[in-house]
Image (cartoon, rainbow, N blue to C red; front, side, top):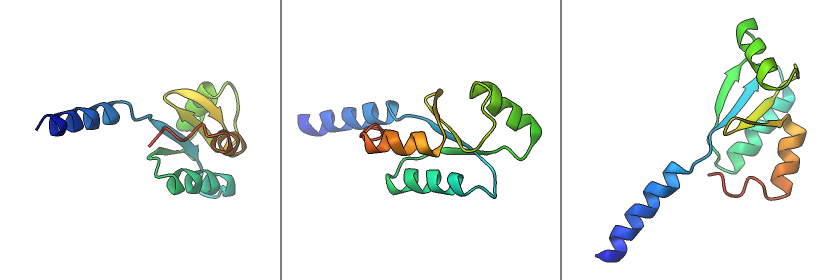
Amino acid sequence: MRVRRLRQQWDVVRVARMARVTVYTTQMCPYCVQAKRLLGERAIPYDEIDVSDDTLREEMVRKAGGKRTVPQIFIDGAHVGGYTELRALADKGGLAGLP
């Protein structure tokens, strides 16, 4: 019974530590598709924000330090960059603990 209780506590801790990933995209963006595919292959949940709306794009530009290209990717509010930076992070094992 004690093992079961510990297992349940671990599940709660794991959920509490799940990183929040946000991907700013547009509909006609091949790098956005690649970034979402990479996250999907690793079963990493993400929030997608379509920046076709100017208000949302300005929010993205502000958060991304002036960068206007898509995708712009954030993990727990920290700016990762675009698809190339996300791929580099994944190749170094930097996404291993996210799901």
